[in-house]
Length: 623
Ligand code: ADP
Image 1 (cartoon, rainbow, N blue to C red):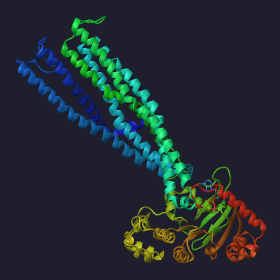
Image 2 (image 1 turned 60 degrees about the horizontal axis):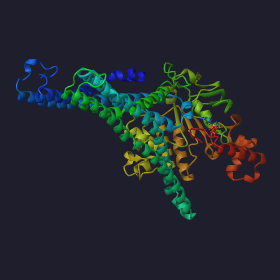
Image 3 (image 1 turned 135 degrees about the horizontal axis):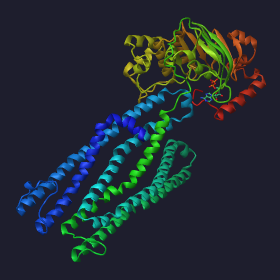
Image 4 (image 1 turned 90 degrees about the vertical axis):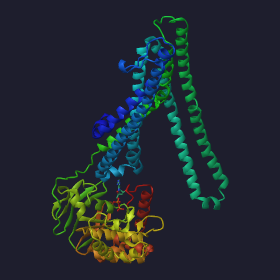
């Protein structure tokens, strides 16, 4: 928390100081009216002592009772005006401070996170990261605005009221302040008791919502299976859980204010009793000194001012604890170091001949080796296709080229330079990646094509779209290139999205291309279009392609068959068919010649399928 404060609070110290000043002076001005009331009673109405307001020069004090009363009224009014002004400053200062810190912290956390490598994202759930960037950062903001100002308010009140009361009458002050720690304890215990109940309530409302959503979505199935009574029962059960949890919280919650009133009421009564008897028949018991009626009134009114701020005491402690946990998570994320050295200082990659070479590359995500001793070599204008069963390691081989991960053994070189010796940015700029599930950002078609090549002109953009066979369908969209993708109404088909992402890559004009099953989820006609657009793209480039449909890579200059991370066969399509091995079998599957497959092949396929279905899938969903 301290770190947060010193690193992020520093830039916002004027707001912080304004918040502190606002809180202190608005609270202190609240002490003026009861004090003036007491003095007016004793001096103007009961004539027990001369009229003197603290801090006000004697020369300014009127001599007539009328004048004194008017002065008192003016001072009270002024204290409210000043109080209102400082109260505004209090709100402005703390909120401006907290919002400023929140904004910087969120942006910084995002920036750091974005730079981490894929190993980090593989291990983390999106929800978990979202929660840090959103909830935790907001939690800190809440503490910095509400928590800190409430804590300061309590401190000022205790010191301020305590100071006034002790100056007026020390022994009665002790009596009047006794309930304060009890109030603090009470609200703290209350918050500790109710928090878990609220958590349970939130969980049960979540479960209920999930159930309702599921049932509305699956209403057809419910009807066709005549499962209405069954579902009514399940909803009844979920709603009952929510009811119970909520009721449990409610029964605790409704005891809070009565409990608080009771405690303060007892304190009030004790102060009233002791003060009252003191006035009536002199200092009671061990107490000594004099008490005037006006001072007594000041006591009674001021001690009531504790109640509301103290009611927040438990909440503040709770806020602090949550903020502490949040800042812990935020800083853990901030201090996360990637396993890859980003090598920002390393020289840029310069691609000359465009020769990519895998030299004895081995790699595993964890202990298990996923790619073992793979050698590949592709030159400019050539296409190397990677084929093989699911889970063979095809995507992994290409992720290594993008340096999403570093190789465990061997090396990957571009024109003789090891990937690890150039800076990551320049490496990734040199490679165009068309994945099987192209991701479009929320925005226009144009923005999506220009993503990564932000300075492209409109002409270049249209050229790229034309080359990707996408121009035609784009101009048919309601607003052409300005159409928002993903917005309701305009849904692009898989093939269209694919072509947009190809256009994006054409625009980027990289030296090296990675096509990851670029045509896996589209119909034959679309595939033909995509193939045509890809044909534009691969000219003059060093291309790696993965495809399940072997027909799409049939014409590749070299086909490498991977099996369990090893390159088991390599050659052209015809050579591999002649070899009559794994490739030939895969080819038969796709040609529909299932009968002629060897039984071992089918057995292995079944086994592999089972492994994949058992959840042995890459975490990024690339399969
Ligand atoms: P292919 O592309 O040939 O289907 P992959 O390269 O995606 O194969 O996967 C090869 C193996 O590595 C599979 O066993 C898969 O479960 C595993 N794998 C893939 N990605 C990850 C990951 N991010 N973390 C751990 N294991 C992974």
